Structure formats: structure tokens, C-alpha cells
Length: 276
Image (cartoon, rainbow, N blue to C red; front, top):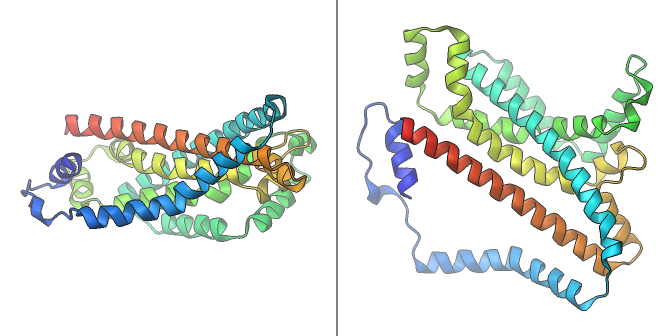
């Protein structure tokens, strides 16, 4: 709450005082209902999975391949998320400083790729990788999976940065244009502003990448099984305890990545507010 008040007050060019009573404060009834909804939607499946794992029989030797697959899949998702974040920051910052309609076309194209069924997107990626102009050994590497993940989930950080600049006061952009300095100086100002929004969208994209099954089954190289495919195989062969354990691993890994992203964004905002 105080960070939000400080941030909004600093964003205002004219330093208009912010009325704290205008901000919504949930009362105990709303907090209780919200906590109950979160418990039903999130807590109950998590508790059920933990109880199933505790009551079943599983060995660490069986889970060791799952840990290995989770680590390799997390690295691929991290690389794809970084590509998405950098692309979103550059695209949104360039559009905010220069204008034009090309960024809207990019947003709609990325959104269409995200809304396309994952299986159809994976088949399209395979068709692209079979072009004669590309190296024949490309399909046996992890680069196609990075490419597929980045192309499908680019919409998340791109939309987040676009919305951020749409809500930002346009007088900042006008002030940069009046003072001059060129496009690169404007990008140097706009890119740090867009970074927290891009990190937010990229962290959500990374979690979805690790859990993606359709693209992983179609595009993953032979001999390198993503963790989502490993989880599917465990469920297919009725090894429920190991499957729930793999699911909990994916859940805690995703939660850890989101927490790291939140800490990173908090440090960025604190740094910006101190310099403002």
C-alpha cells in the first residue's frame, strides 16, 4: 500500500496529492471470502497431492530422472522467457518512443499464436524446421523447443509491457521529444520502465512453458524428455505416487520462479523510486 501510494504520486508530473481514502481497502469479510476461495482452488489440490505422495510408495531412484528432466526443461524455459522479455521490452519501448502501428500488429500476431492450439503451433514449428535451407541436425537439438516456447508465449510479456505504457502518462514521452536526445536516449529511458512488466509476463510464461505438454511432445528432441512428458508417462503407467511427486516438484519450481521474479521486480521498483 505505501509503495503503491509513493509510486502513483511520483508518476504524476504535477505532483498532485493522492487521496488515500479513494483507494479500496478490503474488510474482514472480503478477506475471509478471498482466503476461502484461494484455499478451495489452490490449497485443496495441493493438500490432496501431498497426502497422496505421503501415503504411497516411491523411491528416490525413480524420481532422479524427474529431477533431471525438470532441470533441463527449466533451463529451456528460462532461455525462452529471457528471449520473450527482451523482445517485449525492445518492442514496447520502441513503439512508445517512436509510435506507429507495427507494434499493434506484433501484439495481435503474438496473441493469435498464444490462442492457437498448442498442438497446431507445434506442428507448424516442425514444418518450419523441415525447410531445406535449415540445417538437418537442428531437430535433434533443444533450439526448436526454445523457439516454439518463445513464439507461443511471447504474448504474455508483450501485452504486459504494452498495457504498462498505455497507462503511463503521455507527457513523459512528450517531454523526452521536446528535450531531444535521439531515439537511443529515449530507448535508454523507456526500457528500464518496461522491464518489471516484462519480467512479470516472462515469469508467468516460464511456468506455462514447463507445464506445456503438447509442444513438448511434438518438438522436444529425441532422448531429452521434458518433465511434462515424463509426468504424462507416469500417469499413463498408473504410477500415481511418482506422478503426484513430479506434479508437486513442478508446482514448487514454478512458485519459486515467480517468487524470484517478484523479488527482482521489487528491487527494480525500489531502485527507480529512490532515483525519482
